[in-house]
Image (tube, helix red, strand yellow):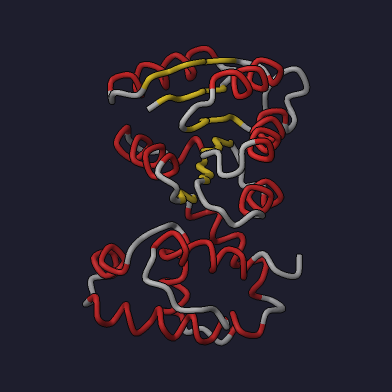
Length: 217
């Protein structure tokens, strides 16, 4: 699997390169600035891009803008964003086309190598890998004025957060220590209350939920 990696901190970039290579990824480019990332994405045609939001020369949203432009040129290009903070605008822009193959992880909340590698593989495979804090802030942003969301029970909100992270019913059941049948009932209620079409496809469920949470911005 071919990876373009963009991270301006040398030690972190070098560590990510070593980690991904150890798990059989091919690093076709490891760059430290926005212009280098733009060239690498245009020339390398990677299977997935792992991108820090803030890159030189501006240290603002250079990395993300390069990734979004590459995704406009190549729709569905898998992009996993790494960031120090939850910035909702960036999450919304990534999710805007509804095609999946996106991820948003907070650097200080990636707790082990397997978690990170799993996220890269999931995004490269067309899925989603959203940090729980990103989901919680999207939920919080909507809960004050969104009546359908306010109708969810506390348990349904728990299930919704886990669903939006990309978890299957079985995984949610294991996390909440309940039966898979109970989770199926909760998810059906959630989709009904949010006015969404019920789907058993994990990625489509995630995208439907996140698209709903992003309406009316």
